[in-house]
Amino acid sequence: MKKELEHFTIDGSLGGQQEWFSEYWMKIGGCGAVTACDVCICLARYHGRPEACPFDAWNFTKEDYLAFGEKMRPYLSPRPTGIDRTEIYVEGFRRYLADAGVAGVGFREVSGKEDVETAVREVRQQIDRGLPIPYLMLMHRDKELDDYMWHWFLLEGYDETDEGFLVKVVTYGTGKWMDLRHLWRTCRPRKGGFVLLEVEPESGADPGPDPRGG
Image 1 (spheres, rainbow, N blue to C red):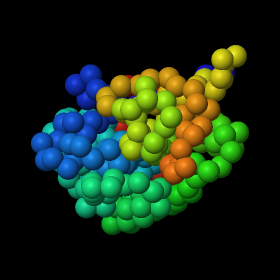
Image 2: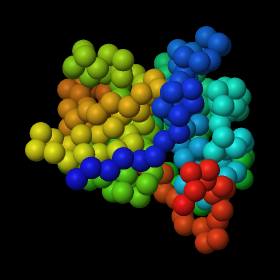
Image 3: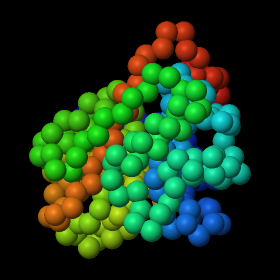
Image 4: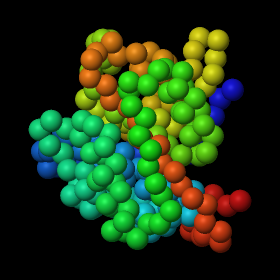
């Protein structure tokens, strides 16, 4: 079984990129803010929370994204040690949504210390709900994952195959399929984890016009 979430593109980039920012700290450490911006656009488009995005979520430009990143920055500010705990991320994201007037969105953290089958189950259920998953990976034994270490990215799909439980990892403007069990088993003492949004349904909520129709 395979399921992928819809995501926006800007100038051929799948979602935003921290490399777009000219300011040093956002360029090297803005991954937390970028994932939050992407999630907010998803909330505005598909989950009846247009106030989550301060721009037109269906007609988003690179300039809009850079301005949005600057709005998000005070809440998920880059720092020398990074946003290296899920609770820091949740606290900042929750404050942003409150200040933006977004109601009915909660958070639940899943620690990297949980067993891998719990992670698989939680990811499957969240993607089935149509919600992207902000994921924090700290260190990992696999050096081929260097670009994903000490980094926030999004999970936006899953594919259950004979080879494993694959997840679609979205970051740096691209999507890549990876084995979740391999990602989760870091074999390092300090764990990351992921964050689940809990979005209450809003009757009569209008997510805004969908230019694709339907």
